[in-house]
Image (cartoon, rainbow, N blue to C red; front, side, top):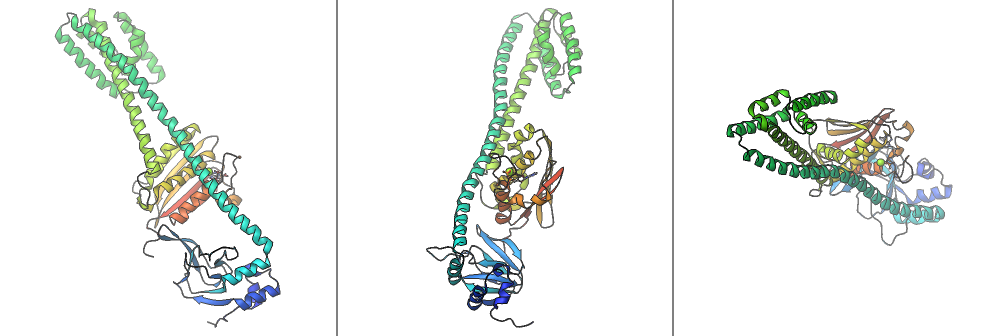
Length: 479
Ligand SMILES: Nc1ncnc2c1ncn2[C@@H]1O[C@H](COP(=O)(O)OP(=O)(O)O)[C@@H](O)[C@H]1O
Ligand SMILES: [Mg+2]
C-alpha cells in the first residue's frame, strides 16, 4: 500500500467528474482548502441529523448510503464509484441555520475521501455560479411543493377510485337483499293464507303431516339440485307444466319455473298426488312451491349479506384502521383485500384474475396500509395496461431471504428504454388528467425506503411482471 497525500492537486481534482469543467483558479482554490481522509471498514463517515459540516467526495472503497425510517436504518444505495459525493450537499443553499446531514454514510470497506469544509465551500460556489444557484434553489423549492401537492392528489385519486368501486360493489348485494326481503314478506303472507285454507278444510291430518315431510325433502333436494343448461330448464318446465295442467293445478306457468329451479321433477309431483286428496292437490303443490320459493329467497338474502360483510371486512383490512405500525404481516391478506376492492374494475375491464398465493408464505415485518397502496398502484397499472382484456396474475413466492410478490399482466409491456424512467416521479404515458405519474414513484419509495425491499419490472410484450421483494427480517434490526 502506498501512503496517500493529505490533499489532492488540481490535476487530480479535475479527474473527479464533479470538478472536470472548473478552471485552473477554481481547482487551485479547492486543492488548497480540501484534504483527504480515510475511514476504516465498518465506521460511519457521517451521521444523519448531525450538523452538516463537511462535503465528501469518494476516492476509493465502497460506501453505503442510509436513511433512518421510523427508528430503523435503511440502505438507500451502495456504491464504489469514484467521484460520487455526499454530506453537506445543500451547503450552497442560503439558510438561517446550519443544515444537517440528510442521511448517513457507512464505509463498507476501507475508504478514502476528498473532504472540504461545508461553509467555505458553499459560499465559494455561490460566487462561482450565481445564476445556476438561483435556478437550483427555485427548482428544489418548486419540486418539493409540487411533489407534496401531487402526492396528496394521487392518494386522494386512488382513494376515490376505490370508494367508487366499493360503493358500486356494495350497492348490488344491498339492493338484492332488499328485493328478496320484500318478496319473502309477500310469499310468507300468502303461505299463511294457504295454511289457514288447508287447515280449515276437512283434510286428513295424516295427509298434512305427509305434505310437511314432502316439503322438507323438497327443500333438501333443492340444495343438491344441479344447475341445468337453459335448454334442459325449458324442457323440464314444459314437462312439469303438462303434468300440472293434466292434474288441474292452477297457475302452472307460474309454478313450473320455481319447481324446476328447486330440482323438482315429475316423480316428486306423483308422490304429492299420491298423498293428497284430488281436491286439495292444487293447494298442496302450491304449499310445497311456497316453501321452495321462500327457501330460495332466504338463500339470496344470505348470499348478499355475506357478500356485504366480506366487502366491509376487506375495506377494513385495506384501510388498516386499527393497525398502522410495523408488524409481522401476512402479505396475502393485503393482496386479497386489495383484489376485492378492485374487483369491480377487474370485471369491468374484462380481465381474468389468476391468484397464485403460496399457502406457506412466511410473515414479513411491514407497514400493511402502505403496502396496500403499492398493491393498488401496481394492480391498477396492470389493469390499465390491458385495455382489450387479458390476464392479471398475482403471485407470492418465498425466496431465500425474502418474499417475492409479482403482479403480472399480458399487456403490451414496458419498452426497454423506459424501464427505469417509469419509476421517476411524474413520468406517465397516460392522457392528462388520467395519470399522475406518481404511482410507481410512491410504490418504489414505500418498498425500498420504508421496507428495505426492492421493486423492479421485468417486461416483454404479453408478459410484464412488477416484482416486489420484501426482506424476511427487519432490515434495521441488529444494526
Ligand atoms: N403494467 C404496466 N404495463 C405497461 N406499462 C406500465 C405498467 N405499469 C406502469 N406502466 C407505465 O409506467 C408509467 C408510470 O406509471 P405510474 O407511476 O403508476 O403512473 P400513471 O399510472 O399515473 O401513469 C405509466 O404511465 C405506464 O406508461
Ligand atoms: Mg399508476
